[in-house]
Length: 400
Image (cartoon, rainbow, N blue to C red; front, side, top):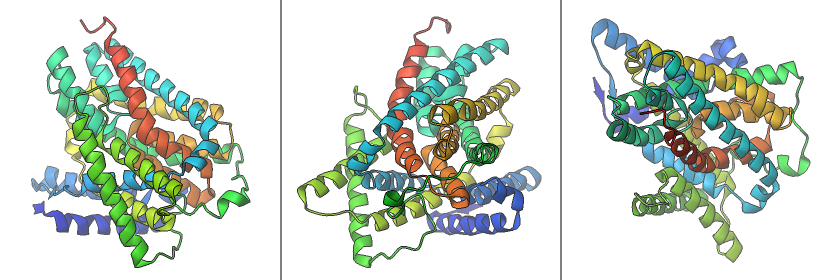
């Protein structure tokens, strides 16, 4: 059974509505702040898995819109990035980047150690670490090619995609419970910041009512289109050079430059309400398509040693978020929300991190700092840091 692009878009919209109804009716999911796209998307993925296993019916979704939606989401993050505001969170961003780098090192060291303990190739442990977990599907697929060609790892690409899929699921499931545990255990409440709260209506409040004109929406769509076109062109031009970065990073970077140059020159003021509205729509639809189209049978086919490695990595991520991220970032409410976001992109992807934080702040209150720091670190700096850490681990003489 194959669904075309429009049918897949319709299904993604219904998945979001389904997720909302599931959370209304299933208290435990609401209590632990599971995001709507995760609840609805995973249910559909499980149904597809059951159809394939029991009745040999495979449902295929056309995911052509998935990448443009992801790029549009990152474009809105860039267009929402006021450099003056980023400067106010500069110290926290630097500290959080250090925390993130520590996780990358821990994931790779743990993956290699577990592979050795389980009698597997060390390179397999590295693939089941920051390459696919903090790196996601794109980074995993790129490095899998290197592992296959230079280190002889059979089926590296298939393993990478399966590991990244596993991480995406767990990243969306453990972030909420981790933050809820920290908030309730330490009796944390949001800081009252009158100067910030009035303007905190972007990704922090996805369900806020926004007064946006059609003209502002059209202008914002044009800005997003520029970000996608220029960012993709830059990614293509820098491919294979020292400046090579994933395309979505270039899209985000173009958004930051575009917003701040236009404002600095006095040519145009970006409509943050329109940007946040379109960003939240892109985020929700991207996650719905990504999760409902998961090939869960690929996870079922993973060898036991790799499943053990990934399960321990997920437990380690939760522990790191609670005992390192939370403590280093201040042991307050913002730190708890940051921990939820860290679980999201430490195992999955930045969109998952944003969805985790939205689910938490909707229930417990806003966290301006978390939504200032996580998008930039999780979408931009982590790819640079991850590439450096992976290359350093590949220099170790343990793979020969």
